[in-house]
Amino acid sequence: MSFKGQPMRFTDPLISGVLLKRYKRFLADFRLDNGQVITVHCPNSGSMKTCKTPGWQGLLSDSKNPKRKHRYTWEMIHNGRTWIGINTNIPNRIAEEAIADGAIPELRGYQNIRKEVKYGNNSRIDLLLENGEQKCYVEVKNVTLVEEDGFYKFPDAVTERGRKHLYELLSMKKAGNRAVMLYVVQRNDGTIFKPAVDIDANYAQALREAHRNGVEILVYQAEVNPNIIYIKQAIQYSLD
Image 1: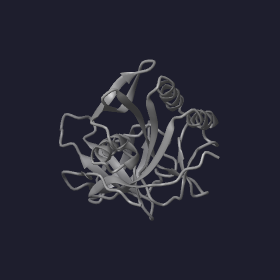
Image 2: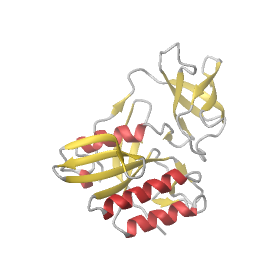
Image 3: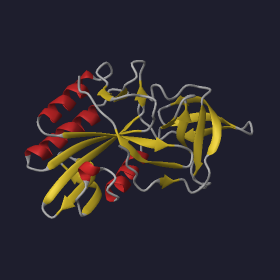
């Protein structure tokens, strides 16, 4: 079953280019269609495994801010089969829009949505849903990894921060609140979602522990194309 929240639209057409290399985590070089080579901001701190192959077509947004050191931002890349949204800031935005529009059935019924609220041990929750005294803590993660086995996976690099977030959610659940780990998949060439045990076994173990103790897991696929990005449909997951 498919659902559609309010889509995120790019205000201006994205700029096409070919990826030359990604380096220093937050930088990438692109050759634009006019032949110009530029360095752009890469809004993704992960390894970007399976979505940073030189020669693939990418799309960039223009901040139109001449004072910014790197004026352009890398938004997505095409692997010959699908667009992959690499901007890790997008999932929080489209998740908030989808929840507000009722496009995620499991998260309907809340009157208020707050972002980046302090909680736990010096952490901030991505989305806090409230309905009177009822609270639902929602942590959002961007999924871009598909390996040869065809599964969507997270994380794509060891993440102590991600593991900390799982335990923070677990503490909220134990305190009597609802806690949800929401994975947003920004590509459509995989099957079901699994934790990346081979990359970060400790994260996978923490996810199983959190789920076993009441933290909910939701996995939703986003429609990603050069015009719009939105939460499209729920997909299955396995913790095996």
